[in-house]
Image 1 (tube, rainbow, N blue to C red):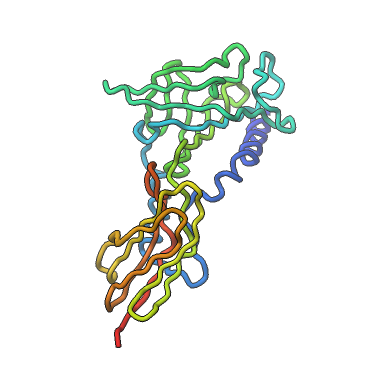
Image 2: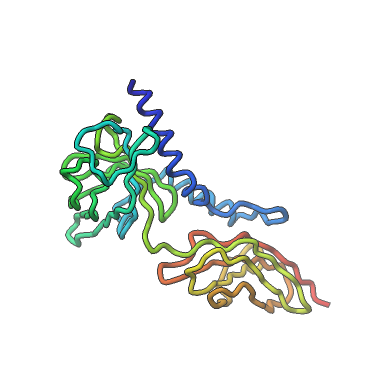
Length: 270
């Protein structure tokens, strides 16, 4: 029975979460793109963080919470939860704020309704001290959640105890006010001595774009200029040599999680 309940919960989690998580990764290569070390480093960073240690600092800020529980038939269920085909119940629209208390401790506070409980008598906002130990979120009432890293703006919390409980089996956290979406389809065109850099704008909240260039394989990417909001074109005159380009979108919350695909052009001169 326990395995059956767990399987139902995993199925419901996949139904709720997968459409949202589908694009939370570095950009895939398109035909003709350069498979550079930077591309693999982006993927490696995502993979390594998923295997590495998560700290309280990683969670600081305000997060949207989507909670999932398998306990569809419980009594005292809060009416704010939605039954999904009798597979599970889901709560959306809550937030969790993780804080550094500046004294070596950390605390969290939720909005109403409380995403950490399904009970109607416990749906008020919730406060607790917390710590993260071996990638476990530990709260002062003893409740523990495994933490899974998706990317810098998304984590999934999984309850570590029995599945048949009204402590949600899983909570997806999505950072509120994240950086803008990743630009894509970077393309280069040589026009005389100029390199025309173009890309696709995938966000509607960027303040602009930062263009980076690397001169040869032995140097780092350096910012060479910016483009304004909604612009998708930049002109560079780098001289002769082999040049690598990539573009990030940015706003007040930082740069996009990853840059665009990387393109290379070689200018030999006349």
